[in-house]
Amino acid sequence: MSYLKQISDKELKEGIEHFIQEAKGKYVPSVTLDTVIFGFHDNKLKVLLLRFAQTAHFILPGGYLSKDEDLDMAALRVLRERTGLDNIFLEQFYTSGKKNRTSNSIVSQLMKDLLGNLPADHWFNQRFVSVCYYALVDDTKVNPKPEPFFTEFKWFDIEAIPVLLYDHNLIVEKALKRLQTDLDTKLVGSKLMRDSFTMNELQKLYEAVFQHPFVRTNFQRKMLSLGILERLEKQYTGKSHKAPYLYRFTKDPLED
Image (cartoon, rainbow, N blue to C red):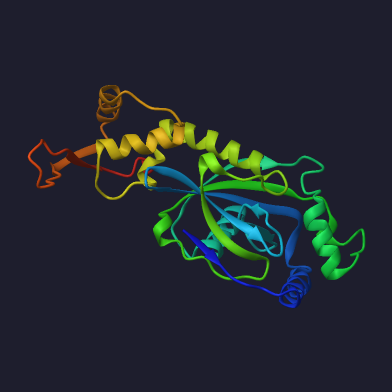
């Protein structure tokens, strides 16, 4: 569940130089967007990360806000560029604004090695505030697009997130807490499940997000009491024991 590409120092330098020149006057100064992209696979909650070129370090997918874009439209564009997907569930959950959040010797040194010293007042050297979103996607449909800054796109289990650049570990922690809240209050789990599923599969999703087990009978009682699930035919497996029922969401819980 990863994508790899090779890139030379020359290609990276040319890509960064082209971006800096193209970005001049195009983007809103000092504003970035970072996205925590969640997927659910093999009963595990996953997060998509990008490895910064010529380093061993990963970061969250992100981008810049164009002067002619609304924030939400910019976030959707960033997600489309990173995943190849449209019509993604997206929720803004945090603004990261600590004064030294982008100070990082690894990236700074890499940029210096490639480009030399940029002027202190260059827009790329300014302080950035990040508007943070989380997204829920079908990880099997994600099709990362090559670009000069990143050489690997990889899904990580939520329990195995490596040390990330900048303050991105903190952003992931806050995204998970918000997802836990929204799973209960907005029932966003519908965005991570197949069209039909067993109650056990739905419980596995909740356990992956909340990171602790639930009592089966209590969980089933609670979910059925919400009035958002329709029971379908049994899931016939060809085995002699009683097969579980399949369920589906009767409506999108987010479209009230």
